[in-house]
Structures are given as C-alpha cells and as structure tokens.
Image (tube, rainbow, N blue to C red; front, side, top):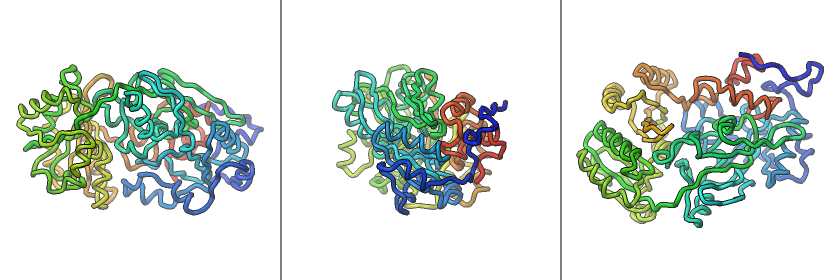
Length: 478
C-alpha cells in the first residue's frame, strides 16, 4: 500500500517536510511574540531528553538532539497559534509532557520547536466514573483531585508522580491497575480525545470510541493532544504487600493462580509484580531487608488480603509485609508502585549504570517452566522481572528483565534467543514506533496523520511508514 500524494504539484507550501529541510526559527518566534518561548541552552537541553537513557543504544544515538526553541502555551488558543506558525514557517514540532517516556518519544531528531504541554493542566470536569482534563495535567495531581471525590484513576504508570496524562496516552500501554482494569487500549479506559491538527488554521478533532486508537500510542506524531476523558473508579486504600518464595517458577505459578482468582472476582488485586532475588537489592529500603528469596509485590484490596495471604501460603510462600503506602513509606520501605514496571529499571540504574532492559511478551499459555529454562540459559546476564496484567479480558504476564549490558550485538542476540522461544520483543532500544512494539504499520494512525499533520511536521523520523511511503526514504535514520 502506498499513500496518495495529496499536495498539489505546483504548491511548494504543501510539500511534506523532509528531514533536514531548512527553516527560519527566528521568523517562527517573531510570529509568536508574547508567548512563553525559551531558546537558552538549559531549556533546549532539558526539552531534548526523556528517559531514553535507560537504553545505552538510544543514549548514544540521540546524544545532543535538542530543539531550537521551547514554547510553553497556557491556553488552547496559544497552542493553535503555535501550530499555525509551524505550518507557515515549516518548523517541525515535538510535543512534550513530563518527559518520562523511555523510547525518545519527545526527543526531536531534527531540531525545530518543542511544545511543552504542561501549561495546559486544568481539570475540566470530574464526574462519577469519568474525568475530563487537559492533556498536560500531572497524573498525581489528577489522582489527588479524584481522591477528593472518593475516586481514583483506573491505572497509571509507575512514574505517576511526574508523568502527565497526555504523555501516558501518547506513549503508554499499561501500568499500575492494569491487572484490575486492563490496558489503556481496552474499551472504557479512555473514552474521548481532543486533537488539534497541524494546519493553518488548525482544526479541533474529537475522537471517541474506537477512533481513539488513531492517536493513542502514536508518539505525538499525528496531532497535538489537547483533552482526555479517562475512567475513574471508586478509591481504595490499597494494601501494599510483599510475599517471598523459595523459587521463581513457584512464584510465577502463584501469580497465575492469584491472577486467575482476580479475573473470577474472588480476589481484588490492583498490581502484581514478580521480581527475582538478584533484583530486590536494587530497591532503596530493601537492601538487606528481604531474605534470599524471590518476591511478589502486590496491591491488594483490604477485603481480599486474608484470601490473598492464604493463597500465598498454599503455594509455599510467606506474606512478610502488608500495609498502606503511607505505612510502608513510614517504615522506610518502598511502595509496591516503586517496584513495578520500568520503575524497577530506574531503581537499578540509580546504583548500576551497567544494566539496561528488554520488554518481553510470552506465548499463551504463559509457562513458568519456560522462564526457568531461560534463567538457566542466560545465567548472570539476565535478571527476571514479570508483570501480571489483563488485556482484552484475559490474564497476561510479560517481562521487563534487567540485562547486564555489554554492547548492542549482545542485545540483538538476546532478543533472537527470546524470539526462538516464541516470545515477542517490544524493543526499547529504538525510537521508531513500528520497530519498537507493533512490528507492523498501524494503518489507521498513518491515515490519521495524513489528515491531522499533512505536512509531516510532527515528531518527524518516528514513523517508518511515513518516511518510506510518503517521503520515499528509509525510515528511522538520522
């Protein structure tokens, strides 16, 4: 399939942006007089990074990439001015939230302007079961506002205290709470998006229902996310717990049993993160606190704690910690949120910059025996960490293992070894959307980009299909 060229051949202003096209950032800035624009080195350096440094491959490849200017609008009208100016002056635009993404989503490959969306942080409406907010709102701020109404978000990333909701929608997949409520793409978790096009004048497009997938997890490459409607659920004072097991395969068998009980409604669980014993010393507050055992970090409804503990014991484990988040923190222990998803990678990197990570989806049905075989094969090169989640109404388990890093060929060999076992790798060492998770073109997202960003000015270089089909150049290069 190839996209039709929609620009008139005699209209150079409608020719799609190509990497390294020359643009006049001074004229762009002059066109936006009165807006909060910064061009100093500090602002540009900060806007040119996110958590891609988790990957030594990305850290090297994206080193020094930064915008020419950073603009922080405070209203939708100002965002519209920025969008129109980018079109008039053909300046590439990268949208940035809290900067907690791991794949270089908000690192501009070719300079241009960065739009810091954090100035648009209003709560528009809080209703039973739903919040309508501006995309730049901090997730922690939204959770606090929801708590005042007796509610909470259905899920959030492990970086909840610093991430923005818009960034989570643009780059996220699942998180804390996905064991209970599914992944972001599951129906009902996100019910409405408002996207501003990169046109002159820009248009406001409302996406609802299945249409949301046109802009969800698109790295901000096909429209500026303005508003989000997201699910709220009744607030629970979750019990943060740690259970210890003598063997990692036994721990995973317990996770399958507890997860199945959760799906049947017999246990109410918000999170389950399985971590092998070689990783737990990386967590601040747990060094020397846990015995030489593998650990399950879980958030459990108070009414389910007794049943959860009994299931732990039935599988040969011991529940050694249980309390509210505040109680754990008061004891100098990390919350279970801080031991989940890529927060585990962050904790490891704080004391050991020689590690990196992979993201592994296992074939169904999930087999703890396969994981045990992999651990024996990889030895001290790979430390296992699994998350239990729900997707499409089914229980799933996936891994974010730590890797003792040597070089990129080592990573490629590990990926090939996992794939030979039937696993799928969501590669965290590429900035190209299709090469990371999907491994295929999302045709709906690509066609929506043609509508919302006809010049291809948004986050250029992140969509391989756009580069190859529209520009006729190899995608993902610099």
